Length: 83
Image (tube, rainbow, N blue to C red):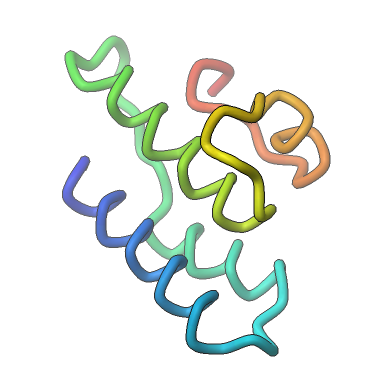
């Protein structure tokens, strides 16, 4: 699970960096291809949530220390804790 999200994070960062014409919708599509399947209380849930926030920050050009609450709302995505 974490391996797939790590690959999704890399793919989003790579595409965003090398394709300046790439839209927010295209980046969200790449992220959704690796979708989050969550099984109850996983031991890795905090790590998965961190990777999800990292991808959202990449898509929205946010800094590492910016809050993701508004970013999730603007993208209309449920954070892992809410799923």
